[in-house]
Length: 214
Image (cartoon, rainbow, N blue to C red; front, side, top):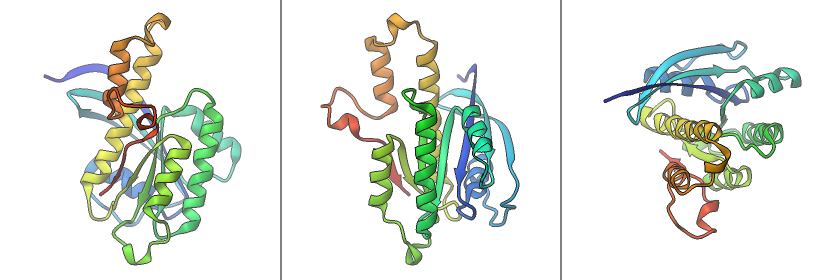
């Protein structure tokens, strides 16, 4: 039975031009792949999404490359969660992604925001310029999730990445609504452990973040 809990999430999709921000967003929302998009426009998608027997009202802002710092900061302040996209075939877009993750991290400070570093175009393996290990190491540095996908070839990988981000964002929302005295309780610890795929493991395991190449 579906639980219509009225939750709402705002997701910001960031990255350099040409990395496939619109492609991954539309692939997730519609399952369709469309190869050509305007890179100079921004689109706000609103959709009710159901997974894990919970319906969530999701707003996804697909940005153009925002050169204006104030504009970027406004977008970051607006969002609850972040998808930072780069092309595995273009090293310069990976460097842009790193800078964007740093900007988000500095903006949020101690209140770490749910985020995913998303390497797109993994179907173009012959042109690869960014190794999987580079993405994984960066995700550990910024304490975010990491996925490699091909929006052109596969809906499943894109869907898994977005849903994993939304699970984390929903858990973060629930954490903020709990009374202070309950935030460190065992029930909450168990819930967070389920979201991040860990149980009562050692401290070294707690540093790991979900990652997938599909």
